[in-house]
Image 1 (cartoon, rainbow, N blue to C red):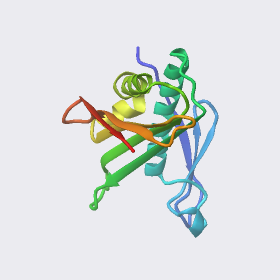
Image 2: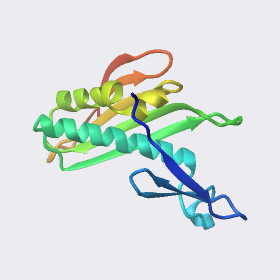
Image 3: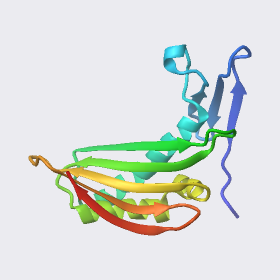
Image 4: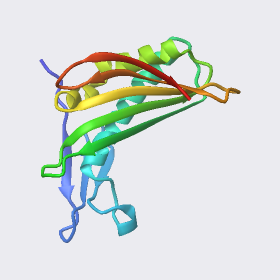
Amino acid sequence: MPTRSSVSATFVDPGGMRVDAESASGFPVRFDTLSSAEGGAGASPTETILAALAACTAMDVASILRKKRQPFRDYRIQVTADKADEHPQVFTAITVEHQLTGPMTAEAVRRSVELSATAYCPVSAMLSASVRIEHRYRIRRDGEATEEAAVVVVTGPDALRAAGRAATG
């Protein structure tokens, strides 16, 4: 039997577009259509989708790197997306870049990103059913001026393919 998940949501601001949700685990999530500069109180629903992708893949990659005994000092995820101009303004392309600093090997990072993108991250799997996602990494090793970067894999409705394009800079 499949596992069931649920979220409850309440429309909070009758004059605006604010929604407060609560996850099944009891944590609040606030959504708003206004930016913080405009007085908004939460991220937009589509921004939270990208944040969920970043969080999901980061947790996978960090866990895999730790199991591989590959230390990292700093780890950031940058997720960017293109949206269609016409409604419903769905994502048309997403790029996920894992930015790590530390003495880990490129092969360990590459394999960790690949496993997250193709086997472990349910958010990535759901989004890949409808949009092209490019998964890449950028490594900066302590004491080195150069970075190592590569596209690991591209997922999406058209194909699942290893990219293997490396770049240094």
